[in-house]
Image (cartoon, rainbow, N blue to C red; front, side, top):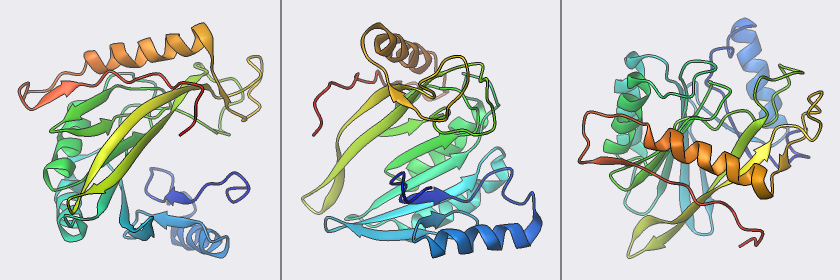
Length: 237
Protein backbone atom coordinates (compact mmCIF):
# COMPACT_ATOMS: atom_id res chain seq x y z
CA UNK A 1 0.00 0.00 0.00
CA UNK A 2 2.84 2.42 0.79
CA UNK A 3 4.48 1.76 -2.55
CA UNK A 4 1.21 2.20 -4.44
CA UNK A 5 0.63 5.45 -2.56
CA UNK A 6 4.09 6.77 -3.54
CA UNK A 7 5.34 6.81 0.05
CA UNK A 8 9.13 6.79 -0.10
CA UNK A 9 10.07 7.09 3.58
CA UNK A 10 8.64 6.03 6.93
CA UNK A 11 9.56 7.24 10.40
CA UNK A 12 9.92 4.26 12.74
CA UNK A 13 10.07 6.31 15.95
CA UNK A 14 6.69 6.59 17.64
CA UNK A 15 4.98 5.64 20.90
CA UNK A 16 3.47 2.45 19.41
CA UNK A 17 6.62 1.14 17.72
CA UNK A 18 7.24 -1.45 20.43
CA UNK A 19 3.62 -2.55 20.96
CA UNK A 20 4.52 -6.02 19.66
CA UNK A 21 7.98 -6.04 21.23
CA UNK A 22 11.38 -6.35 19.54
CA UNK A 23 9.99 -8.91 17.08
CA UNK A 24 7.38 -6.40 15.92
CA UNK A 25 10.04 -3.73 15.34
CA UNK A 26 12.21 -6.20 13.41
CA UNK A 27 9.24 -7.34 11.32
CA UNK A 28 8.32 -3.73 10.50
CA UNK A 29 11.85 -2.88 9.41
CA UNK A 30 12.00 -6.03 7.28
CA UNK A 31 8.63 -5.37 5.66
CA UNK A 32 9.73 -1.85 4.68
CA UNK A 33 13.06 -3.14 3.39
CA UNK A 34 11.30 -5.81 1.33
CA UNK A 35 9.03 -3.18 -0.21
CA UNK A 36 12.01 -0.88 -0.87
CA UNK A 37 10.49 1.85 1.29
CA UNK A 38 13.13 3.81 3.18
CA UNK A 39 12.92 4.04 6.96
CA UNK A 40 14.53 6.09 9.68
CA UNK A 41 14.31 6.42 13.45
CA UNK A 42 15.00 3.81 16.16
CA UNK A 43 18.69 4.15 15.43
CA UNK A 44 18.36 4.24 11.66
CA UNK A 45 19.23 7.18 9.41
CA UNK A 46 18.02 7.28 5.82
CA UNK A 47 20.64 8.78 3.53
CA UNK A 48 19.91 9.20 -0.16
CA UNK A 49 20.99 11.48 -3.00
CA UNK A 50 18.24 13.43 -4.73
CA UNK A 51 19.13 15.55 -7.75
CA UNK A 52 22.74 15.62 -6.64
CA UNK A 53 22.04 16.61 -3.03
CA UNK A 54 22.55 14.27 -0.08
CA UNK A 55 19.37 14.13 2.00
CA UNK A 56 19.49 12.74 5.55
CA UNK A 57 16.30 11.88 7.46
CA UNK A 58 16.43 11.32 11.24
CA UNK A 59 13.49 10.41 13.48
CA UNK A 60 12.81 10.47 17.22
CA UNK A 61 10.04 9.92 19.71
CA UNK A 62 10.36 13.39 21.15
CA UNK A 63 7.86 13.77 23.94
CA UNK A 64 10.61 14.11 26.53
CA UNK A 65 13.76 16.16 26.91
CA UNK A 66 15.91 13.06 27.44
CA UNK A 67 16.23 12.63 23.67
CA UNK A 68 17.79 16.07 23.22
CA UNK A 69 21.41 14.98 23.60
CA UNK A 70 20.92 12.15 21.09
CA UNK A 71 19.26 14.48 18.59
CA UNK A 72 22.04 17.05 18.87
CA UNK A 73 24.76 14.40 18.55
CA UNK A 74 23.11 12.80 15.50
CA UNK A 75 22.45 16.07 13.67
CA UNK A 76 26.00 17.23 14.37
CA UNK A 77 27.31 13.92 13.03
CA UNK A 78 25.38 14.00 9.76
CA UNK A 79 25.16 17.70 8.89
CA UNK A 80 27.49 19.03 6.19
CA UNK A 81 27.39 22.40 4.39
CA UNK A 82 26.21 20.83 1.13
CA UNK A 83 23.61 18.38 2.43
CA UNK A 84 20.04 18.53 3.74
CA UNK A 85 19.14 17.19 7.19
CA UNK A 86 15.47 16.71 8.09
CA UNK A 87 14.52 15.82 11.66
CA UNK A 88 11.10 14.28 12.38
CA UNK A 89 9.70 14.15 15.90
CA UNK A 90 6.75 12.12 17.18
CA UNK A 91 5.79 14.50 19.98
CA UNK A 92 3.14 16.73 21.53
CA UNK A 93 -0.18 16.21 23.28
CA UNK A 94 -2.89 14.35 21.38
CA UNK A 95 -5.76 16.62 20.40
CA UNK A 96 -3.91 19.81 21.37
CA UNK A 97 -3.41 22.59 18.83
CA UNK A 98 -0.83 24.24 21.10
CA UNK A 99 2.84 23.27 20.79
CA UNK A 100 4.41 22.71 24.21
CA UNK A 101 7.68 23.93 25.66
CA UNK A 102 9.34 20.52 25.25
CA UNK A 103 8.52 20.55 21.54
CA UNK A 104 9.96 24.05 21.21
CA UNK A 105 13.13 23.16 23.10
CA UNK A 106 13.77 20.03 21.05
CA UNK A 107 12.92 21.71 17.74
CA UNK A 108 15.22 24.64 18.49
CA UNK A 109 18.01 22.29 19.60
CA UNK A 110 17.77 20.32 16.35
CA UNK A 111 18.08 23.49 14.25
CA UNK A 112 20.83 24.90 16.47
CA UNK A 113 22.76 21.68 15.78
CA UNK A 114 22.36 22.15 12.02
CA UNK A 115 19.01 20.65 10.96
CA UNK A 116 17.43 22.30 7.92
CA UNK A 117 13.82 21.35 8.66
CA UNK A 118 11.90 19.93 11.64
CA UNK A 119 8.62 18.05 11.15
CA UNK A 120 6.28 16.92 13.91
CA UNK A 121 3.35 14.57 14.36
CA UNK A 122 1.42 12.73 17.10
CA UNK A 123 -1.23 15.27 18.19
CA UNK A 124 -3.53 14.13 15.29
CA UNK A 125 -4.48 17.80 14.78
CA UNK A 126 -2.69 20.74 13.22
CA UNK A 127 -0.29 22.94 15.16
CA UNK A 128 1.55 26.09 14.13
CA UNK A 129 4.62 26.59 11.95
CA UNK A 130 7.57 28.52 13.35
CA UNK A 131 10.36 30.34 11.57
CA UNK A 132 13.39 29.82 13.81
CA UNK A 133 16.72 31.21 12.62
CA UNK A 134 15.46 31.02 9.06
CA UNK A 135 14.47 27.35 9.34
CA UNK A 136 10.96 25.93 9.66
CA UNK A 137 9.54 23.92 12.54
CA UNK A 138 6.21 22.35 11.54
CA UNK A 139 4.96 21.39 14.99
CA UNK A 140 2.21 19.02 13.87
CA UNK A 141 1.20 17.90 10.40
CA UNK A 142 -2.08 16.52 11.76
CA UNK A 143 -3.61 13.35 10.32
CA UNK A 144 -3.43 12.33 6.69
CA UNK A 145 -4.21 8.66 6.11
CA UNK A 146 -5.05 7.57 9.65
CA UNK A 147 -6.81 4.22 9.96
CA UNK A 148 -7.32 4.41 13.71
CA UNK A 149 -10.52 6.44 13.71
CA UNK A 150 -13.59 6.04 11.50
CA UNK A 151 -15.14 9.24 12.88
CA UNK A 152 -12.35 11.75 13.59
CA UNK A 153 -13.17 14.86 15.61
CA UNK A 154 -11.40 17.00 13.00
CA UNK A 155 -11.37 16.44 9.26
CA UNK A 156 -9.07 19.28 8.22
CA UNK A 157 -5.34 18.78 7.76
CA UNK A 158 -2.57 19.73 5.37
CA UNK A 159 0.28 18.64 3.19
CA UNK A 160 3.41 20.67 3.91
CA UNK A 161 5.56 21.13 0.82
CA UNK A 162 8.98 22.74 0.75
CA UNK A 163 11.73 22.89 -1.83
CA UNK A 164 15.49 23.22 -1.34
CA UNK A 165 18.33 23.99 -3.71
CA UNK A 166 22.12 24.00 -3.54
CA UNK A 167 23.48 27.55 -3.73
CA UNK A 168 27.17 28.40 -3.36
CA UNK A 169 27.85 25.04 -1.75
CA UNK A 170 25.05 25.32 0.82
CA UNK A 171 21.53 23.95 0.83
CA UNK A 172 18.92 26.69 1.11
CA UNK A 173 15.14 26.65 1.22
CA UNK A 174 13.63 27.96 -2.03
CA UNK A 175 10.02 28.12 -0.88
CA UNK A 176 7.39 26.42 1.20
CA UNK A 177 3.61 26.28 1.31
CA UNK A 178 0.78 24.34 2.85
CA UNK A 179 -1.77 22.46 0.79
CA UNK A 180 -5.00 22.19 2.83
CA UNK A 181 -6.71 18.81 2.73
CA UNK A 182 -9.59 16.90 4.29
CA UNK A 183 -8.55 13.49 5.60
CA UNK A 184 -11.59 11.93 3.93
CA UNK A 185 -13.72 12.61 0.88
CA UNK A 186 -16.73 11.45 2.90
CA UNK A 187 -17.52 13.61 5.95
CA UNK A 188 -19.91 11.06 7.46
CA UNK A 189 -17.45 8.18 7.62
CA UNK A 190 -13.68 8.21 7.19
CA UNK A 191 -12.77 6.61 3.85
CA UNK A 192 -9.03 7.17 4.52
CA UNK A 193 -8.64 8.93 1.16
CA UNK A 194 -7.53 12.55 1.66
CA UNK A 195 -8.77 15.19 -0.77
CA UNK A 196 -7.28 18.61 -1.56
CA UNK A 197 -9.54 21.42 -0.37
CA UNK A 198 -10.56 24.36 -2.53
CA UNK A 199 -12.30 27.70 -2.04
CA UNK A 200 -13.60 28.66 1.39
CA UNK A 201 -12.67 25.31 2.93
CA UNK A 202 -9.06 25.78 1.82
CA UNK A 203 -8.96 29.36 3.06
CA UNK A 204 -10.30 28.31 6.46
CA UNK A 205 -7.43 25.86 6.98
CA UNK A 206 -4.85 28.47 5.92
CA UNK A 207 -6.30 30.98 8.39
CA UNK A 208 -6.30 28.36 11.14
CA UNK A 209 -2.63 27.52 10.62
CA UNK A 210 -1.79 31.24 10.51
CA UNK A 211 -3.62 31.73 13.81
CA UNK A 212 -1.85 28.75 15.42
CA UNK A 213 1.50 30.00 14.12
CA UNK A 214 0.93 33.50 15.51
CA UNK A 215 0.05 32.02 18.90
CA UNK A 216 3.36 30.20 19.27
CA UNK A 217 5.16 31.56 22.33
CA UNK A 218 8.90 31.13 22.91
CA UNK A 219 11.35 32.75 25.31
CA UNK A 220 13.70 33.98 22.57
CA UNK A 221 11.45 36.41 20.72
CA UNK A 222 14.32 37.93 18.78
CA UNK A 223 15.44 34.68 17.16
CA UNK A 224 12.04 33.23 16.40
CA UNK A 225 8.89 34.49 14.77
CA UNK A 226 5.68 32.89 13.52
CA UNK A 227 5.49 31.80 9.92
CA UNK A 228 2.34 32.61 7.98
CA UNK A 229 2.02 29.82 5.41
CA UNK A 230 1.00 30.60 1.87
CA UNK A 231 -1.99 28.79 0.42
CA UNK A 232 -1.25 26.52 -2.48
CA UNK A 233 -2.33 27.62 -5.90
CA UNK A 234 -3.79 25.23 -8.43
CA UNK A 235 -0.53 25.29 -10.36
CA UNK A 236 2.04 22.60 -9.71
CA UNK A 237 5.74 23.35 -9.99
